[in-house]
Length: 379
Ligand code: HEM
Image (cartoon, rainbow, N blue to C red; front, side, top):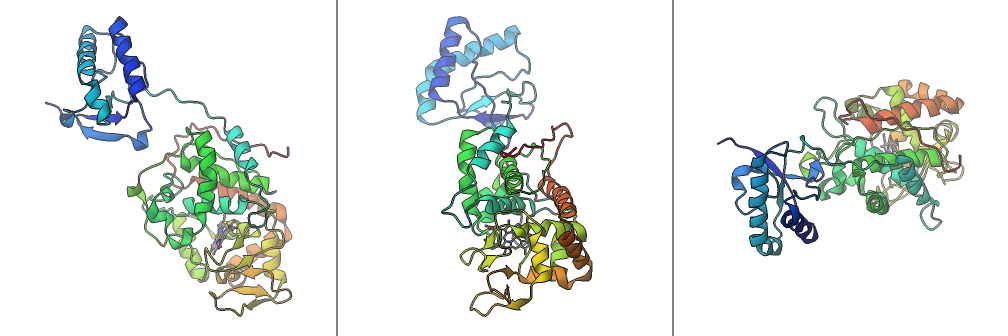
């Protein structure tokens, strides 16, 4: 006997009775969708199906007398065993998912974009916007990529699970994930990994940054795909470490500097990373100010009990991480800081290219996905 696998999904009591009534009326096969999200489906050996109610045939295309007989058998089993099955929360087999793919609901991504844009502003949160923390979520969910092994990256959204969510580098990102949960509830068909990356695009565009072309196609996977801790940069280190981390993802020096210009937005939180303060005086507007401040201010070590960081000598209100200062200490990095400080358009263009690349790392695109460029809500 050949060894085959079947995918399972739980069928509600209502769906079951509707199907059984259909069967009794005209022996029509059940019409409830038997498919579930591939990533969350469970595969069990066919030989272990004994306690499972079969509502489907093994045949890929129906219509033959054989399949009718199986429907009759299925109906009888259903009629007799229904109570037992539903009182014990059994699952139901489904046919080969390749044969008849589930009807896929078209997602209006511009609409999802607008919904995310709607929840950004909040005067009671930080500097008045959730944009920076959403951007950081998009980056941290993508920045685990390793080009050698093809592991990590935005595909999968493994930060949903306690292990990765609990890594020190991700402290505080529960705020972003919780915020997006409302959007997920309203749009259950979008994967978390598409949603989180899309939120990064929304943050950049709505806060005044460049247009980031984005395409869907990420699927959520289970916790076994979680990458080990230590793949994201350590803010207390310098140029060598930064290169080790970003070269592993496949970026060069120019792209690294462009990406880190995102520190124009947001701030450090003592309760999250341990560091404190914003990088710029306009932390909710996407600008090239991070580079300007790096070059134009005098940075002195902050006198405090927290981790080593720098503040601007004049006001003490702005901050830089040791890793940020590496961008002006290292010659190859510094040339890009100087260019971006002078030319915001160049920075915007390079950031858009590098950020799109970041969000797509490790995603098994088919090549047929539509590439979206979203309208800002202000347009
Ligand atoms: C050397 C590389 C990097 C290091 C060491 C680094 C480190 C950090 C640290 C320590 C924080 C503070 C977190 C907190 O306390 O809330 C932070 C915040 C932030 N980072 Fe980075 N980061 C790096 C690269 C990037 C990149 C590539 C992006 C985006 C493309 C980014 C976007 C952000 C944003 C937007 C925030 C502000 C979050 C908020 O306001 O809640 N960072 N980063």
